[in-house]
Length: 286
Ligand code: A3P
Image 1 (spheres, rainbow, N blue to C red):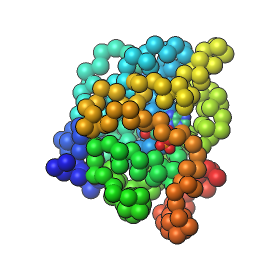
Image 2 (tube, rainbow, N blue to C red):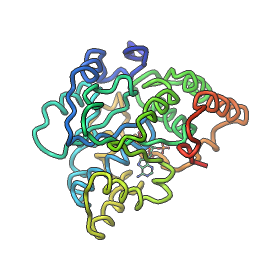
Image 3 (cartoon, helix red, strand yellow):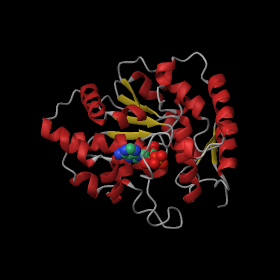
Image 4 (tube, rainbow, N blue to C red):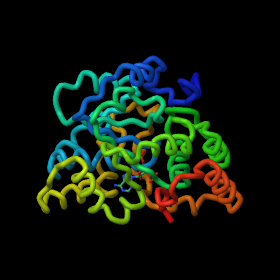
């Protein structure tokens, strides 16, 4: 890989499908509309899961759409070149969009629009482990040689999309806005039905009980693992190896199988320092 990252305003981005001028255009020019439904996360927090649920709410549980169209076309990432084009050119279909942008680079138009945003928070220790496997086994950005190395990069924010701590702190300043719904990955795991009900309520959409069951069935971890369209299809094998799955383990607490006691302590110290002042109930993963 010629470059490790694409940099824009001090934030490292993956190299494939990312260009500073596209990120700048997303930030400064992209016009978000009131009808847009936006999924925003720090990578590896459950983005694909929420997009699957939103897609299925749209189709009332019918899996045809999610089984025939890739996640990144159903809900394009506005900061990528292909996603930005897809967003601007889209003429039909539900107005879903996705992003991992930190708040300071997000389209300015959002902040005066009525577009609805869902932000998902996941235990950053699990985000770290999930990210390690993702960046290590794909060729989309700088590859860590070991978990020890990735651990250091993560704490310093030298990973795609920068610091988890800054991302979450930035977006949490918006958490009380009525067009923003904050979900926790761990709560979604514990009670997926309530998660779907909360999303429906937020969007003002009603589902029949049978439709809700279908949404749950078709967005389960296993169903998503088996759905090619939810696991980065149609990407050259030299970038994403054949058989690679976004749906890796889908559990809470996998960090416990990986962190040493010293890493746990170092992580918790950084967490306390960087997240000081935010309400602890935002981070209820244990
Ligand atoms: P793991 O790598 O820990 O398994 P993102 O979509 O933001 O890239 O997040 C990917 C993570 O969400 C992966 O975590 C993946 O397994 C998990 N995930 C995706 N769909 C899920 C589902 N239906 N239920 C639980 N976890 C899911």
